[in-house]
Image 1 (cartoon, rainbow, N blue to C red):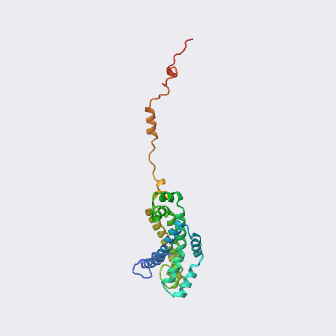
Image 2 (cartoon, rainbow, N blue to C red):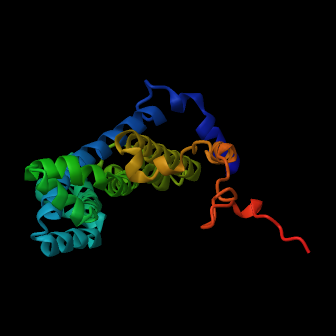
Image 3 (tube, rainbow, N blue to C red):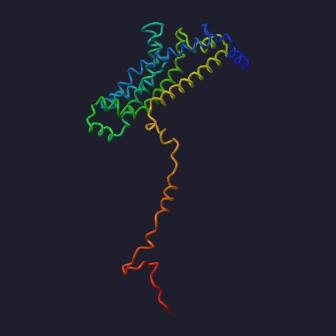
Amino acid sequence: MNDGILSFLLDGTNWQPGNNDGFVNRTIEHLGYSATALVIAFVVAFPLGLLIGHTNRGAFLAINLGNAGRALPTLGVVMLVLAIVGVGLTPVTVALVVLAIPPILTTTYAGMRAVSGATVDAARGVGMKEWQIVFQVELPNAWPIVFGGLRNAALQVVSTATLAAYVGLGGLGRYLFDGLALRDYPRVVAGAIVLAVLAVVVDLVFSLVQRLVVSPGVDGRASRGPRRGSNAPAALTASEDVPDVADDAPTPGGVGMDKAPRKSL
């Protein structure tokens, strides 16, 4: 079986861009489904999380509804929408959006609430408007937590987008469902390996974007940088050049302590 997996992965025809059933084409389809769902979920959840996090109003309802969305079975959502609108991209997109909204919403809210109240009060004290406080004070400090939710949502969506093949679409799920139907297990394992590698690459891309967007002073990178050389030797040298005036300080009698006359026996 291992030889079959390697031969399937290393087969050049499976990597040709013109092959509709090849890895390149299936990966592009898979990324298309995932990106569509992530963009829709971000457009819905991110502004809502900013609003709730800034005002702290409606947090209980929104967060609990978001957490309830995590409990919904993705395949069940696909079948429900499939029964309503029929076969197509819509059932898969709706299911993936429902899956991606909770982590984006909750982490955006948590990131906004994690900003110090003293910082927000100081921003109001210098005359900043509320929208300026959101985008220039709270959001820059909340980006590390927000990106954590985005990366979590991206991994969940990429790994679950294989359900697109269940409703007759493409993507890397075709290797899983077609391989199981044909009992071609090397195809199944090879598709799972490519999917795992794709998930790792997507996470690395989001990590790079986070590194470019988030300020080094916010995520702690600045404190891990190289430290400047110590000024202790220079300070020590300077102290050696300063005359010691303590020994020559005059006593109340007007004579230095080290130069007091000795009594003869």
